[in-house]
Image 1: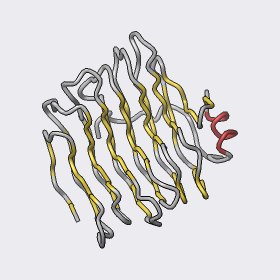
Image 2: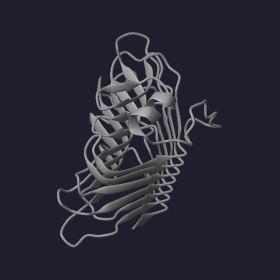
Image 3: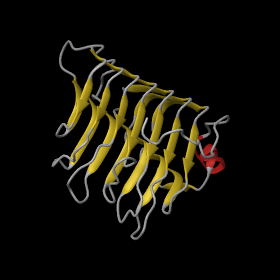
Length: 238
């Protein structure tokens, strides 16, 4: 268990929970993860979950990830699963803020990124995700991203806010992006989605764009009680 720590000015990963034979139930709880100076790494993760079985990520604050690279990939919480393993990952009550205090004007920005397998499950509850940035020139961003199959994919009571805004180029900034739409069970409701910048798009499900919450509800057959409005965060950082 990694609990009540402060991680700052790291190169590529604030916390790594890496799976291996016999490793089960690792936890990252109530940590603060941030950068005050940019990393030279071009791929940066606040928390990296690497095939760990039954990890719990709860109560962490992740902000100000930034790179000296021209088009880096910045991710708050990343999960890569394991084929054939019926693990369940819990991501609860975290705060992720990227490109708010420090403006990253290009690159790929992701709040919570699921990249599992058909036997893997995830529960994403009570998180607040803010993707900021002004004068953006390039890059695709998403507050919530699902990139591969799942056994069970549960998303409840989160706020996903993409306020990122272009000054030029064709960058797209999603509140929610599912490039993969496969799960044995989808269970998603009571979430709060919002985009309000130039280049902002509510969501995409597979290859079909959802211009608003109603379209997302139709595509997913989920989210009956979810909402879409400005969450009016007291702070864009924490």
